[in-house]
Length: 132
Image (tube, rainbow, N blue to C red; front, side, top):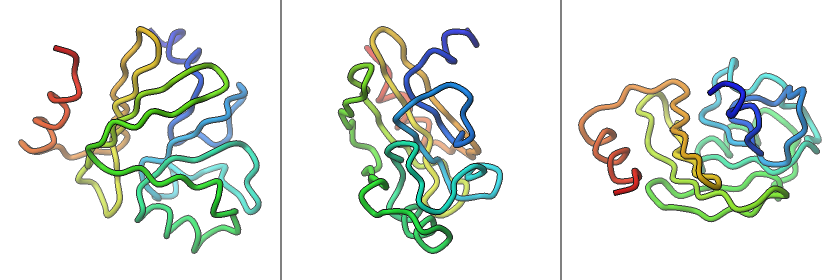
C-alpha cells in the first residue's frame, strides 16, 4: 500500500518532496504541515481552504495564482500532468480551515485525514464520498 501511495501524482502536507509532483494539497496551516513551504513557491499548485489561503498569504510571499481554493463538500475535478483527480474536501474539525481530502485517481481512492476530529457530520460526509 505504501508503495502505491508514493506513486500518486500529488502530495498532501508535504512540501519537501523527494519525488517530483506538480499538485499539492494543504490540510491546514500548523507548522508541521507547512514545512517546506517558502517565499516565491514554484513547486506547483497548492489546493487548500479559503482560510488556509489567507493564513499562507500572511506567512509567505507566494503568488496568489498558485493557491487554489477548494469548496468544502464539493467534488472538484483537477487536471494534473498525470491525469484527472477527483477531490472532495471535508471539514476536519481540527482548526479553522482544516480539511480532510478524499482523492480519487484512476482506480485508487484515498482519504487523507491529516489531523482530524470527525464527528457524526464528518463521518456522514465521508460516507457520501465513497462509491456505492
